[in-house]
Length: 382
Image (cartoon, rainbow, N blue to C red; front, side, top):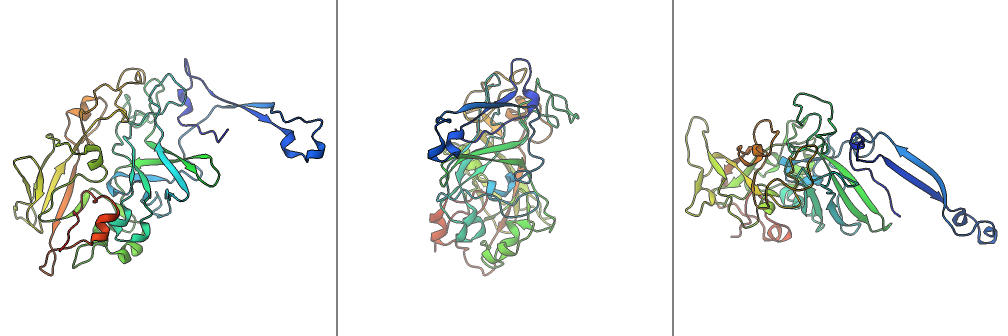
């Protein structure tokens, strides 16, 4: 038997739900020399039953500062709450099969649904930073939502900090399971999900690590970037097809989300067409040194929780797979229709051109090592 991990708030353990009890056994045979095992056969004997009355999401311990900042596009490989770039990397030589913990049935043990619409996807940190040392062919965990969780600060009792057991799903934390190849045991890490990060240094990723001439990521600048901020503000080259920010593009796949909308942003009093939609509703960046906004939708799938039924849900989504879901809808959210009818949050893009007057380029090796970083430039060759 491997490690035991609690996966949700203990306030759920009432009525038809069950408190966490663990029965521990001991086997003295394993601790004794072979010559002294006559009185202790190789049997596991009941030792003690422990009751765990208080289970909370991490406020202490090794997981308390773990973060996924949605705007970063780095998932679990971004900085933690304190700005430290030391979060666990799922190096495939050390860890295997990272997966998102997801158990959406409130009447079964281990209830904790995937309200964050989390997913495991290839890491693009090497591409976003320009530093190939981050290319281990590894995956990272990402999240698309923070507002679906029903808990004290965002449940059916707005303004209350108290969790309500009858409406509670989980706090906005993603639980990632993995196998430790050295021990053969299953491990788990927890990450609180937040949309943006201010950053104490006032520096912004990725805008502040771009080379001033090529506008490509400069690895040296990333190393010097301390306590960075993350916002929905991304660079893009004029002439590029607009791709949803990573990993929203993976959730969309090859679909055309007709609900997507965008518009141009006035810069220094000048109205400039920076965003253009072709006849197939594909969006393009069409001029340099401009700005525009864009609102993205993605399709619901069976691994994403969307169950607003009374009393904590019934374990099934309220809408069918493929239903367009707003990526981080604007304003307060408390019902399913807030996510299928309200406009998503607008991410902003800065159009840039090479100061040298030439066409910006991206190395072909960068294009090979991982998927194109959405919300940034596509791979280019001369």
